[in-house]
Length: 517
Image (cartoon, rainbow, N blue to C red; front, side, top):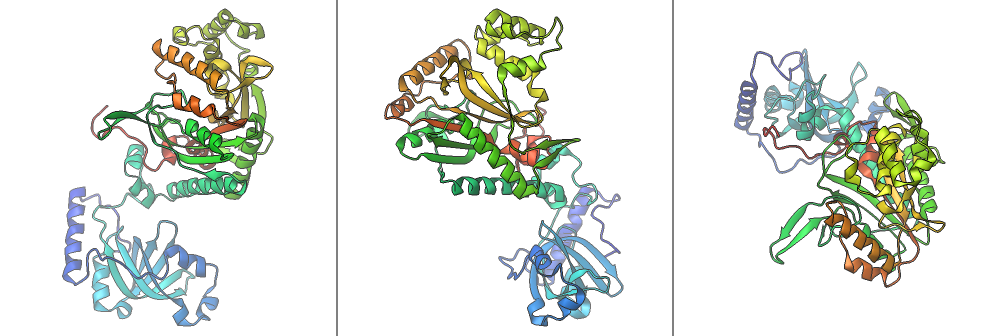
């Protein structure tokens, strides 16, 4: 042991360091210690010790009976420092640290020899008495040491962590060991999900689970993953959304339902997209889109206050405010607002009312491959919005009044059959939520499904299939209902000031290692 055992030695290769650690493991075995014991009778985790005694001074701790301060605490070795006849070992449980104070006359010959064969990253158990050192450091005076597991590979440098971003994602377990920021990110994410559950449970919503494998993928415009069920000899699809099953449940008599679970879409990977992602979907019978928007404002503002203590969230050098009410902006008004400075002049309101006008506006806005939108005005308008407006929507903004052509599961506005009673919430310049008044007329839904099938036959592989059973379900009378989906991963990005969705997914999808593809 040196003054502080190094994590990496520049003179040694990785193979040499691994070999040295394996040799240390063999020496530990020769001392009679089980290398991988089945259990350790812990009385406290490291964080429990810190929570219990971290706020007490030395006098207050010493005033307690020694027996009440006796603990058995497991942890990972993160530092070893020798000072005279004592050795100080920093133990971590992944959340915080505590110091073990070890002397030979405290742990005996066996414990002392074990200590001499420890490496950074090893798992040990310490039995002893809680106290504070003369310098005020909360510590456990060791009376016995137990070996729990050997870390056979050296940890990354403690000051720099994992600097290779790809390795952070591939080896999240290492990232979690060395990065407090990463651990905090995923603790916040877990708290967000917990808050969502409590929020909806308190308002009478029933949490449900719907099929992950479906005969007909529906509920969104997306390409599905396909698998095969051998016993039934049928192709199945990993779901792209739970929507159609959740609305079946509303029809069946559950007026308020929600689900938090995975969706799968066979699409590209980017800073905002992972093929496997987590969604919240919730449905409220007898409500409309405005009710869902108000509920969403309450949900997000409440989550920010409880989890972060504020509704003002840092986003890089900017600040996002989750204070209600959020801005409401129609899709057409958004295009007009952010399409004022284009080559050839600002977009005019009348251009958005015709197919030719939309094509002309799209050309000036730099939209490429216009033919891929066919002669569907709603698709052109949506692309104009995505190109011109979305990159500017930092603050929470409900974009409303979507074209009916791109909203096959939504009701139209009573006063305008061309416009869906639909909204999307944008925050941090990305889409966070999508909601609308649910179409509950079975005949109209059948007609819209047939239109989707025609688009699919025309080459649109994201168009929906005809779901006969869902249409039949609607024929039993689904009440007026509003529904919404919220991206949990993107919400976690906002709550942790993370720029990549991979930073908030424990194990994001990666290319096979070494393929170069």
